[in-house]
Length: 268
Image (tube, rainbow, N blue to C red; front, side, top):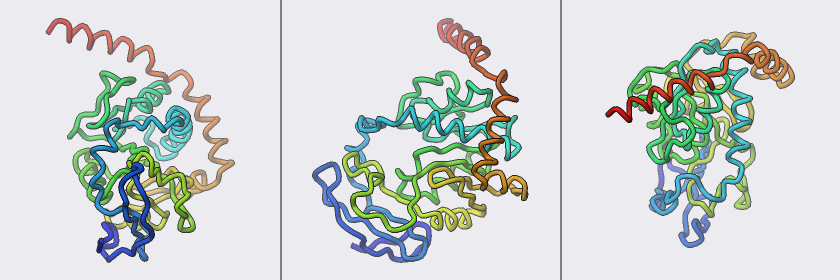
């Protein structure tokens, strides 16, 4: 089977074959230029997404809380503290609720999953936003270039803070992130992959760590780069930021908004 890399536009090489969902023999390919690892065209996804959130994902709450802790200082460093955010692929709305709890104007959007925790705060499909959040989405995409281009166009922004676990050396078949049992992970990234992807859509790439990444066309100054790239300084800035923003929660104002939304719905 031949396969073209969606980022480098060159033929990919067969890396290995492995059983997915315990029954499908699936081929995994790698691009020699950008190092993207990707499955063959994923014909099994309808079965894999019978439940949008896999029952095997026991770390979902832990990751969302950790993500919020990263996002607050990063957003402030980017000068977006007063901005609007759309969490694309927001799942149950967990991250949106956590972000609103610490004062950010965040809304959620996910066509495959019910919004449970951020009802009333759904992102409008074609409304402008200052930045996108896209956590645990990239590994589910067969064409990440098209995805980002379309979302940037719809939301009138070219800034996205995203998560996906990157690799350094080509991982063996025992790498947990392949998630063979769930069948939902189909694309796997090296930092070079994300850098070339960003360049292809007219942006710059900044790696925060091996799992959180920034793609943007915004100019990032020297001091911003220093705090983003220096772990101790980043977390010292995070502590100061948390103390400074501690009273900015939207918990109570959102409660009032939700009452209005519920009353309006009942009147209809």
